[in-house]
Image (cartoon, rainbow, N blue to C red; front, top):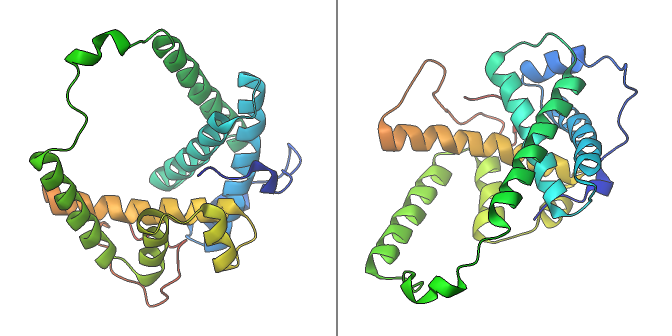
Length: 221
């Protein structure tokens, strides 16, 4: 479920100083990540709505994808020089172009005439086996996480709770806070699965559970 964009706080003036906020985010301060996410999401929203001339669900998806991508890019580089807002707008425009190109490629697709040649959509024994293995692997990833991430991902993906429901239960001010926390937790899950499936490891990739179980903003990558 996509975020309610009306819940994003007003963006700061164009010349607002984002440097200290970026530094705080890179220092793994939890609130800095949520504040920065809100700023990026606002500018991505304005860009996507203008580019697509729409406020539909595709805009919400592009906004979330853009904000998460920029934050992840910042985290990987561990530094930034330039105008972060302009960079975010560029990323949002690229996401919009990709979406438009995808729509153009698929708007004429019609599989009705090929229906009798398509594979049977019902699940077979192999599908059931793969599903069981995925569920088992996902549970392993959950078990390896701190309690905060485990509860969040369990609520979203196993119980199927909405972002708004999780926001209300956690006492958060806006839905983008849930998106930010989810992105942090999914990154931890990604690292676990890479190690589990491919035996990948690198310096700094160990993921020990923190003493503060709700420290979503900490970078354990």
